[in-house]
Image 1 (tube, rainbow, N blue to C red):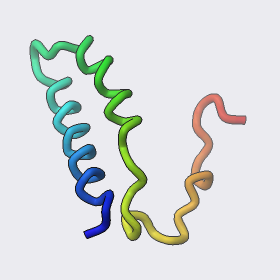
Image 2: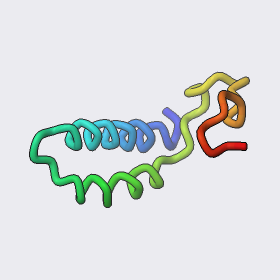
Image 3: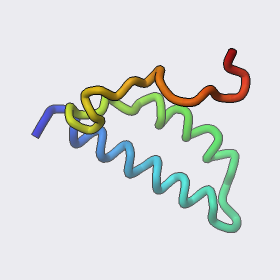
Length: 67
């Protein structure tokens, strides 16, 4: 297994669980707002083979605010 595969999978799982928690009634949205950017920033580079080799992160549709 690659060195970052376990960390990547664990962080993605935590982000998913946080998203599910945020949708629950009574969720502490201040907690979600504070934790989610930090958790996303800690996401390591995805393991090789996660995305196609010809994947262009700059390709794709324009988003609102893009020129």
